[in-house]
Image (cartoon, rainbow, N blue to C red; front, side, top):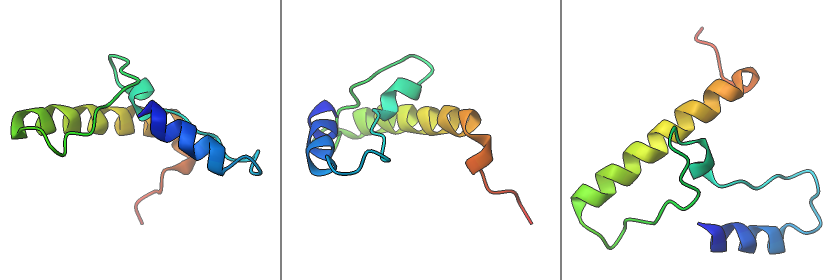
Length: 71
């Protein structure tokens, strides 16, 4: 969430080597705000989990040099 990104920026002011981004920007359908589903119903949790899974997959495709290869 944006407020969490702002808090991380505040805490990491002395770390210019650390980048902060919102995971939802890597969703196939861009969704910067991924609301924490903790207090919501299972259906909403499943929808958010699918968005997170989609975003992580897309991010991994953009960063192939960071992906471990199977041995």
